Amino acid sequence: QVHLVESGGGLVQSGGSLRLSCSSSGDTFSSYAMGWFRQAPGKERDFVAGISWNGGITYYGRSEKGRFTISRDNAKNTVYLQIDNLKTDDTGVYYCAADRTLAHPAPEVYEYEYWGQGTQVTVSS
Image 1 (cartoon, rainbow, N blue to C red):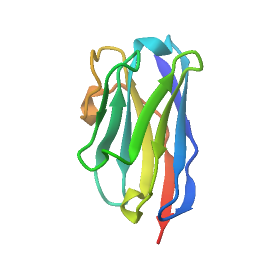
Image 2: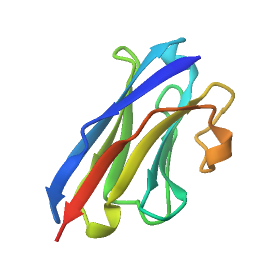
Image 3: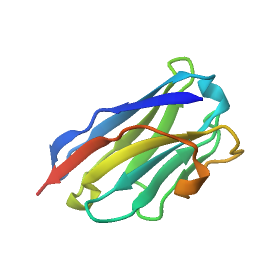
Image 4: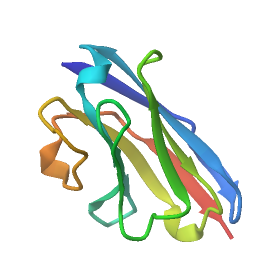
C-alpha cells in the first residue's frame, strides 16, 4: 500500500498558476497509476487528470485539457498537477489517488484504491 500526501494548494487570483504535489511513501511508487480529482463544495469528486506508472500515458478530464498538466517523478515518488490560467470554477479540494492494478490512468473514483487527504485550492475573481 501507499500513503499519499498532497501539498501546494492555496488562495490564488483568477488567471494565476499553481503546482500541486502529491508525495507517496510505502510501496514502490512506480508500480502505481496516479490520478488527480477535484471536489467542489456540495459536488461529487470529479476526475481531473491521470498518468500511467511510467508517465507514458496521460489522460485529462473534458474541461481540463489545455490548462492542466500532470507529470510524475518516480525518483522522487511524487506526482504533480500544474494548473495554469486558474478560473473560479477550479475551486475545490484536490485529491491524488493511486492504484496498482490500472494499466492506464482511469477517470472513475472507484478505480483507485488509495487516496490522499486533499489540498484546498481557492480561486478568487
